[in-house]
Each structure stands twice: as C-alpha cells, then as structure tokens.
Amino acid sequence: MLEVRLLFAACLVLVFAFCFVRVFIVASLELSDFAAIVEKLWDKWGKFSAVPLSQLLSYPGRIALAFDEPIVVFTISIFAISRGSDVVSGELNRGTLELLLAQPVSRLQVLASQALVTIGCLALLSLATWCGTWAGIQVTSVKERVPPPKVKLPFLPAVPLPVRSDEKIEIPMREKVDPAVFWPGALNLFCLGCAVAGVSTLVSACDRYRWRTIGIVASLYILSMICKILGLAFEQFAWLKDVSLFTAYEPQRFIAIATRTPADTWTFFHQVDGLSELGPLGYNAILLGIAALGYLAAAIIFHRRDLPAPL
Amino acid sequence: MTGVIVESNQLTKTYGPLTALCECSLAVNKGEVFGLLGPNGAGKTTLIRLLLGYLKPTSGRANVAGLDCERQSVAVRRLVAYLPAEASMFPQMNGHDALRFFAEIRPGSDLARSQLLAERLELDLSRRVSLMSTGMKQKLALAATLAAQTPIYILDEPTANLDPTVRSTVLALVAEARVAGKSVLFSSHVLSEVEQVCDRVVILRAGRLVHTQVMRELRTQHRIVAQLSAPLPPIPESLRHQLVIASHAGAEVTFETPGELAPLLGWLATLPLADVRIEPVGLRAVYDRYHREQTRASGQREPADGVALEPAALPGG
Image (tube, chains in turn purple, orange):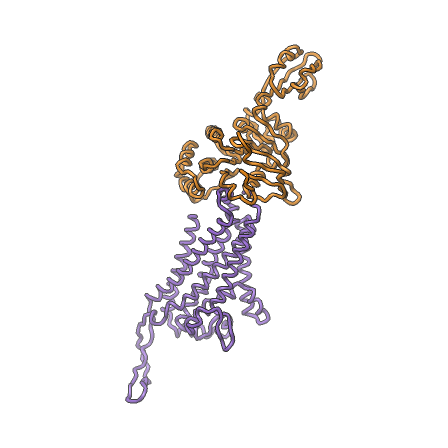
C-alpha cells in the first residue's frame, strides 16, 4: 500500500511538473522559431499529426503536445499497468490474497476496491496534468513584437502604418490561452489510463505471476502503438488504426476542437464537412467501454477461477 | 461436543488427470480439535481450500454450519478464521498496522485481543513486516487469526517456523479455543503436536481419506515388543479380540492391543518372553500403517514425506 502511495506520488509530481515545464518551454521558444522547425518537417511527418499545421503553430496547439508526450502517456500507462496487474496475479504472487480472502470479503469486493482506487488515482493524475498546464499558463508570458501603430481616420477603419517595430512586449500566456481548452485532453488521458487498467486487470485475473501479467500487457500496449503508427504511415495498413487502442487517444485533436469549435467539445458526434464524425466524448466512450469490458471480464474470471496455493 | 459444524460429502477435486482430493467425506463436531494428517500432496490443503471456497469442487459438496462452501463462501468465511500454511502479510505494514487492518476488515474482531496474543507469542509489533523473519510473520498471522471471534479456526501448519517455546504457546491457544467451545481444523506434519491437541485425526493418502482415528481410543492402545525364548503358544480364544500379533520375525514378536492392556497382562506373564517393552501405540504407528512405504524409503529416523519425526512422536522414543 505504501508502495502504491509512493508510485502515485511520484507519478503525480512527474506529470504536474512536466506539464508545467512544458508551458515554460512553449513560452520561451518563439512561435516563429518553432514554426521554422515544424514547417520543414511537415511534408514528411504531417501525416502523423492529429491536428492541422495551423493548430500546431498556435499556443494552445503547442501546449497540447504535452498530452501526447511519451513521458505523460507512459506515466499514466505505467501506473495503470502497475495497479491493474496487482489486483489478482500480484496478490497471488505475493501470497497476500490467501490471507485477504480468508476474511469475510468477496472476490468482487476485492476487485471493486482495487478498481476504485486505481480509477481515483488515474483521475487525480489526469487532473494533475491539467493543473500543471494551468499553473504554467498562469505564470508564464510570451514575447511578441509590438504591432504597428494604427491611424484612425474619420469614416474609415483603422489603418496600420507600414512600419516594422523590433520592439517586443511581454504578454501573459493566460491572455493567449484559455486553460479550459485542455480539459478534453486531460479527460482523454484519464480514459486511456482506465482502458489500460481494465485490460491489465483482465490479464491479471487470468494469471498467477505478476511479471508475466506485466509482460503480456506491455506487449499488447506496444503492439497497439505499432498498429497505429503503421496505420498512419502506410495507406494499405490504414485498417490497423481501427484495432489500436491509441486511435481513440487524440488529445491534441480534442483540444483543437475545444479551441476552434467549442460547441463540439462535449459531443459524441459532430459534423465535419457535412459528415457526422465521432466526437471527443465518442472516443472517450470507446476507451471507457474497453475499460468496463476489461473489468467486467476480470470480475467474471476472478469470481469463477480456482485460487492456487501461494508458491 | 454436540452437532456437526463442518461437513464434506464425497468431495472431489481434480486438475485434469491429477486427483488432488477424492471422494472425501468427513464431519467435524462443534468444540472438537480435528487433525488432518498426511504427507505433502495428500490433499490436506486442497480440502481446506475447498472448505474456504478458494477452489471449486469437481464433485461432491462441503458445508460449514449448514452454509455451502462453494456458493456461500463469504458467509462461511465469516464463521471461519483461517491461517494459511505460509501466511504472507502486506510487507509495507508494521505489526500494529497489520493487526489493525485485520481487526477492521473482520466484523466483531478484537484488536486488543490480537495485541494480547502477539504479546503471548513474544512478537515485536513495531517492526515492519518486510523486516520480519519467517517465524515472526507466522506469529503475526497467528495473532490476527486467533483473535477472530469465530466458532471455527482452520490452522494449516500453525507451528511451522516457530521455536519450541512458542510452539507450546500455540498448542495451548488451540487447547484454550477448544475449552471455549470452538472447533479447530488442525493440519500439521508434526505428529506429536497433533497427538497432543487433537480429539480426532484423519489420515489422507494420495487425495483419499484412509483412516479416522479417535485419539482417546488410541491412548488406550499399547504395543508389546519382546524376544521369544521358545515358540509362541496360540492366543486363547477369550483374548483373540483384545490382542493382535502385529509382527513376528525370528525371535522378535510385536503385539498390539486395540483396547485396555490390563486383561492381557496375566496371559502375557505366562509367555516365554524376554526384553519386554510396553509402549503406547501412538499416532506414529497408525500413520505408518498407511504411509509405511514412504517411511521405510526415507529411513526410520527421517521425516516420512514431510512428516517431522520428533522424538516425542516416536513410540517409546
């Protein structure tokens, strides 16, 4: 239990600090410099981006990249795998399930209490990513060139003077970015964590060795990642995206939707070019569905299986 | 002792071709200390795990206080305090935390009693479980288990890894439980301990229950080992049911008495015997009837398939 608390505390500090620092980096690297780098790579790597270039070159778009950074995704995933794998095979492996189930508690109670703690911790970790981003936005500022002065003539709109100023002014990041647009990203991260925890719990419920459980889940996780990358990279393998867990993990896209079409932020379906597409909540529902199925199957298997004597 | 509190009926557990327990039928009475004996793999732990609902029976049924062990396992475990053979505690807790955890998780459990038991077992509760020795962990698990106010205790190897003084304390605690009217299912490899605390013992062999021994009856049985200086005369008709020739090899003869010894002494005094030794039959002898081959294979003084052959467990030892 202390072990879990330490892992949770470490993950919490890590994701908060990373998201906070990420905003600092965004603020310190001028947009024009960042654009110069990205535009060079866009022809080759643009197909891997979940958002259009214009979004990526905006402050919210750059900050949103944090939700796709391996450090954030892996921290959540490692926590979910660690907790999920512990539920049955971890307890069996340590021999603690024997004494725990000697008490008048049902197997479902054991599983449900573990699931509640895991989901609660995942919610807090996801919240920490948002809080880190929010804190970063509150304390950073960006430097931008002073806009050219405008001349206001009677009966005409204001006209900027054709002079270029080298003077730069500091503008607080909070004036450029609304932290609320990152909620969909944090929610999507939470749902991904739940899905990974659900699958891990399912494998754990079938197994008796924790390290084997972790190995199986990690393999499935990497396989899922490879499927998405191959699906994005090659047209003929586009179908692979449909079997990948990560296809439903699109935080940048959902943050872009929140930035550009806020009305579509909390929808299951939305209209894109006249066609109905799955909205952010639709993707999250897929991840939560996987989580629910994983936990349900785990509960059935755990309830029915024989519990071997500790090794 | 009134009424049956634990009962199994034709209980069977198989794993593919392996039969871990085969058609085991037994009944444990209220207020009885009931021993389970057998070498490793005999089916003792399988039987216990079936009673607690950890395993689903292949066939047959078991119930505790009328509750089905498979379908009502939570209700069963409300009535049973179980000490596993190798109890693993949560490593990050210290002794106090572990006892508090088990007192909180079991309704009606008594933290003060578990702390008192820990004291009797000479356990330092301030130490973290991960830093405890195997014996200390065993004491902690014992304190948590025996503190539960349940009518039944199931103790699987309760004295394993304990020093002789603490073993005696554990046996005393089992005896106290019996006095308090609780039933105890006591599984052990140490024959002397089983002999000391159990009212009844079953012997399991290869998953089958092969013998039930009432310990009170065993205590009246004796074995007479002697050297014959002349041929043995036939046993008189009147004594045939009170005496059995267990072995007769060369000059050495061994008699066993299923009942009281006193009526036989007169006839025995007329026999041409020398170097006469009279000893209680003891559980060892009963055990050997069913596991003799293993005992012989592993040597007279060696543990027979994990059964610790303590001096006290040996007839006349």
